[in-house]
Image 1 (cartoon, rainbow, N blue to C red):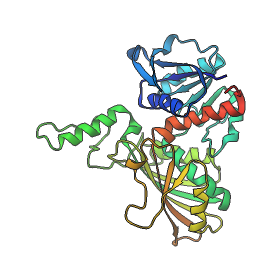
Image 2: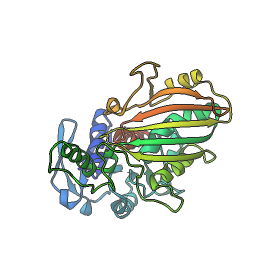
Image 3: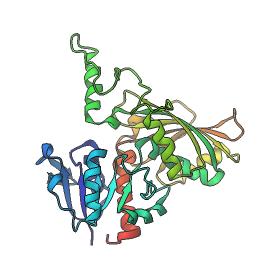
Image 4: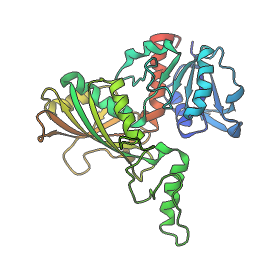
Length: 340
């Protein structure tokens, strides 16, 4: 016996990836429906070897459906997620709307699976920010061993995190560099993204941090440990898919790099590729389409008493969004609904 599953925002990058991953992981589905806004109504999307025709989100009745994976913006989520939750359908939300609500669990299944029990507070579960998700997968097993005091992270985030228009902008700007008269001015981003990097993701806050940087701080505290100090610099780079992070960690106790490497090798959701030779590390291009979070460049930081550096790479459309949502659905099924 399987589940009745709704995918909301099924025509977007993340929604399509949710459908792909549900099929790839053979999630126990008895019935599935793809929902979209009226402007995308009737669009066909793939689910394994099946083709689904999108239905109207505005008129859909969530009664009798087990879970809904939401891949729409905060405004649409604010309107439709409570309707689904009130109808008894558990919402797994990929937007930022509910992440900081103390009554709603923010879950990365490899990190804080027990938080799933809190879903019943509002019948809603939040999916974390893409940059946070991959980082906390790496932090948690190390934190369990040596307790993390402080994290300094710099991100190198692909344009797919901004949606299809951003992917098109990078592609068209890149082509325009080689074709006189076809230069493309920035529209998605405040500056040119092709052959450039932009130290600005989301809006600026009074502190000088961007909202993306603030998200990494707040979400790491909620998911892993509120005592961890985090400082972040988030940068958009001219990569289509795959986020990278340079992470510096300060621990309360000494942790040898070799022990850290072995801890990470056996941790769930992680693949360690760490050879001290040319090409002995993972780059964003190599992580695309993979479920894992890849860790490389593990080494001692000798400038502080108990420090490590590492390089972390993951497919942001997968672990950073769609995969994590499906893993939450799997966890919900195993721990709570128990039908599949």
